[in-house]
Image (cartoon, rainbow, N blue to C red):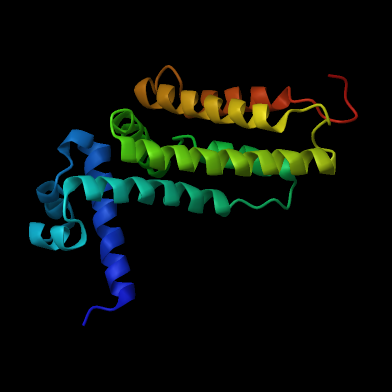
Length: 201
């Protein structure tokens, strides 16, 4: 008898297989047969967990976003809000192979979400949740004195998200023109000009 834990582990393994196929060969290469071959199981086993390709892609999209959330949750705020925000923003950049794999697949899903209503709804909900978390962190920074009272938390959250998304696309499409250290320096330049208390703005 398959336990719930074993079922969850097998499902996660198959979703990782979707990510591997998408990251190396593109979203169009993802299929029940290709994922089965990637993981080393029969197509029937994949279809036991995901009846259709669309169902598998939707689950994989949620899986990517959960992995991104899990990474962000590991960031400590013991050194202050500003340091934690920077750590989260850097972790969303494709600065190493593991993060590049996640970001590459996430961007591929975004492109598909443009023409797939269900994926678009998932992404919209994820963005709203992420923006709310960023706003809450920035508001906390204002309360602690790390940010000046005149900082608009919602605007700053949008700017940070847009900057990281733009840098990520450039890093993946032009890694020579925008290497990781330059991308991080660009992020730091933005963070450095955010108004702080006790400093002229």
